[in-house]
Image (cartoon, rainbow, N blue to C red; front, side, top):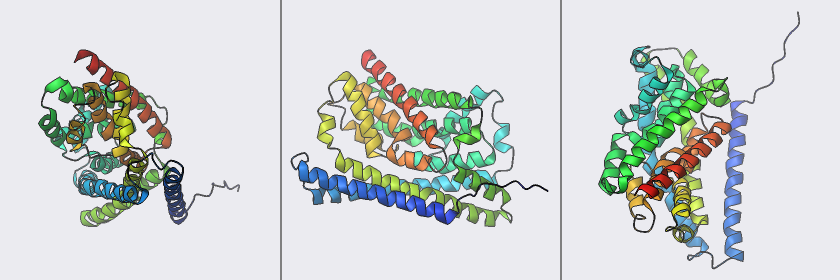
Length: 342
């Protein structure tokens, strides 16, 4: 009998070691860049290297501490969906038409008071439950913008002035459904997911025991998947803020087009929680255009450095690149329209 040979798959230990080496290599590159800039352009930054390094570590820790409670809440909600909600309960409330189902999922975040970090494990739970990749992406993109805490905080910061709150909500809803529609046309949805996540799905499906045991096992699995990405993303956010002088971004704040690009770049770099980013953006409202503020508030919750690291635990690099292109182009167009109308 002929036997079919299967390609060898890397062990979890080898995969973990590779990721550790990549993280260490990235850290070495960032540290080397700091020393090179300090050596060849000492006047480029206002503060000396030790102070900038301390600021970078402080920023990284603040991003991590700010995000951690929401990640844990998201893991808990994910477990509730996977383990405690009976099969078919959520699905029965969903429309059958794909576009209508995605529209409903994009508004589901109104009932889930967590930021983008917590939505990632919740979205993983939806995937494990059997929801499609495009449906889950629609929820994942819209949820951190339409959740009740974000709506309240954005209103507290801006009210209804310059249409910033309305533009943020409409923009988040539209870009989420646009991304969901684009990826719904992919012929092989499994190719949009990482192999590691597919293996995790198989482990969860095969998990036996009562609900208490399955809850504990799934809690450990999700934290082991999400926490390394959250730590790396937080460190990246802190390091980039040290490497990029904010004065360079502020210098172009009054230009209608460049201000939008600058605020989108700032949103990606600072990696703020969507529950509080409106108050940070408020400090730029006097020097930057309303359209650039809207672009900041749309881009940040979807494709900042921390979010990209978290999304990489589940979705392929190609998906992240595609999402980034769509979100940046959409946010730039939305910001331009707001500038023209206000």
